[in-house]
Length: 231
Image: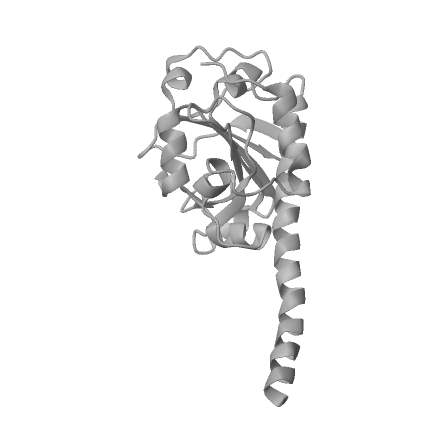
């Protein structure tokens, strides 16, 4: 009886910790959606929508603290959603949690937070990041994305890049190069969010889970702006 009582007590103590971990990831998903909506809806400083139409996946890292990169070169956390279907032509998938590691972003010295948006522009880049770590600029070519809803995207650098990236800090929105950093899926965060062991392909390609309510803004905004893939 004592053993049963101890196990029951331990379970009751663990439950709040599990709930708090899930809430933290839910907040990250929601914040990612808010960041993406603000940037895509911006009339003059946003991301060209034609690039979103051509992208396979969208990655958002909200509120990356610059101090974290100064102390130990740590990482930021965010989410990725990809178009579903064998040829990435279907609707946007539930989000898989992501990590950004090993980066030194130059101007990122200080305490303010920076939002990062990345578009993965082809199937090779999408499949690479879904199954393993991807070194930006090494495993996949990268470029700073053009700014402005109507900005031209017909430059050689943009057209050849597998990953395009932007940053927003203190109201300043700009294309930014993340070359040298590593992007990977965060399976621990996926477990906290969905309550079971899941890989990124389980979430994006195999449709093993439904999108959490916290992803409503993220997915509805992408569906509104770019419901269909354009090669």
